[in-house]
Amino acid sequence: MTRVHAFADDALGDHDAVGLVEALRRREVSAAELVEAAIARTERVNPDLNAVAHVAYRDARARAHDPGPGFFAGVPTFVKDNVDVAGMPTQHGSDAFVSAPKKAHGLFAAMFLATGLVPLGKTQLSEFGFSAAAEHPGSDRCATPGMWSTPPARPPPARPPSWLPVRCRSRTPTTGRLDPDPGRRQRADGPQADPGPAAAGPDDARHAGADRRGRRGDPVGA
Image (tube, rainbow, N blue to C red; front, side, top):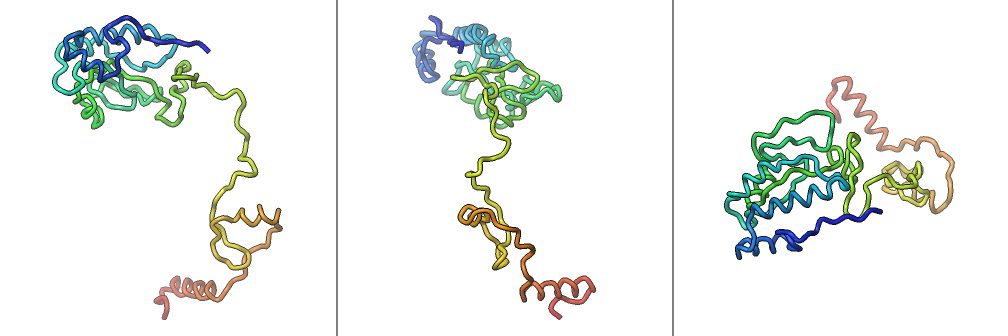
């Protein structure tokens, strides 16, 4: 496994987002320096990670000079490619269509970026988020922290193991009632012969007669 990291002796240092806010307030760094350091780190490791779906470095550099209000004002970040951000396309990890740049923030982006965060772009996700692997069929493989998001070396079994309970509802052959766990009898007694359809009881006959009268247009229960 190839190990990569982006840590460097730069404006970001080893701070988390709160540490960067404190450094900004102490005027040890500027928002522009943080954005440039974040871009440099991204460019350094993205060839190995393939994590970035869309870059918006020009807009990020412009916003860094006036990040606006908010607790995290000037702190760089990325958002997932299923979030609408003004000026960026939203592909949802898919090649099935080509998204035009969005005219306005979606609800989440509006709240998220109101904290003053500076978006550098968007990161990969599986096609429409249907898989835990952060890639879609038209892209190269994407590395996630601690593992490669590639198929397992041994494929899963074609059907669930025999010990895996499959819960469904079916009528029991003796009572005609719904059994929430029909596999329980088979697990306890072994394979059972098919008993055929359950015998019709008085309730079934009454309901069948009501159905026939309803089809003739007669009031049910008359």
